Image (cartoon, rainbow, N blue to C red):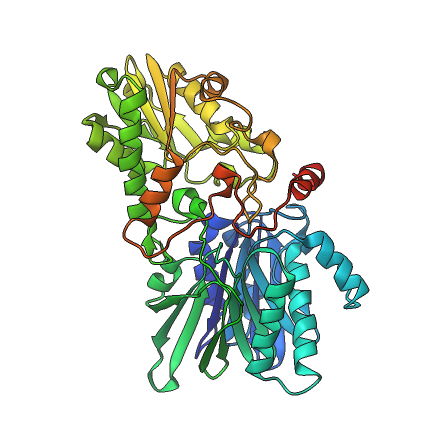
Length: 485
């Protein structure tokens, strides 16, 4: 999971992209990068850390041009500590291309071999984004046959990318002297939304971003979600051309975006994240009634912030008082996306504090958005007991995460998932709760998709069914043996 944004404007975009990346900071905090295009020239700045730490006034001054893109990184490939693996990535031929990418490629071994052996291209990192930009560059070179740039060649190249690349990818690229292209994998797993606004006599200004909140903050009109397999090219003059580049596109957005990753004020694929989380709470409440002693529960409490909408609905549906017993330190990053288990565990108590006045002598029902590794859940249950809770019923708005997620979320090995190979009773004992209730898979799917015309989601981490159809047991075993923390 990462956050990406691209802009074609009538004025310098450096500050606009910086502001947009600040809005997307929840999607990645390992590193960040901005690239701008001024005619034929790129300016690039990349650094470790969060947006507010990474850029100085001198950096922003160097980022000249009215077209640009940006990235916040949450490492799922390569090593989080290596600054050279921060995005964007640049290749100088053809034309000069700079690219950012949100997602995860699942045939990196084959692509690495092909790029060396067939395409004669050198790779300097283990980042799959570097693979993607080199595949795009190779295919654009083949399509163009050394001719002048044309969007037909670009769309042909992206079609060839779809044929070669497996996995998830929402990508934005700048092409020197020409403009910006955004494209999405044929399954539409990771989000990408297009917006525009009027710039007076100068025509339209355009933005592409991972989440709609970037568009709303900049007062852009939401034009559309870029479709699965679709590509949109925006010239430096503000002209826009779009084309479907995949043979058999099908929309399977990632369910985890709606459960945890996205900000609640975003709309993805026409579905409000906030409203989806409310519906997850409605469904969860019905399951809680079946499996927990509801009559003896005194209060319902959320784990802030992403579980709050679901918890409010659970309390409302069950007729139990809603209280906020955990105070969140907003200056500590999201523990789920921190690199390394030891770092995550240490950060839980720095991030959350249980207020004894809300827990003392109460039977507490805690609602979290999900349970992945169990580290946070175990610490939270212990904190609740230390704060004086008589009993702790722990509930998850998501089903048990039993399988690796290979499409851009950092849960690539089953051995680190608390639900993998365990029964609900065993997980309950592992996290130290009195009762543990999970959302049902069918209820999760129905809650997210209710009211939309989307028919399916990527739910692979819950079901073990990978929507691309290219994830083998051999690949999962290889991934587990080669995963870097």
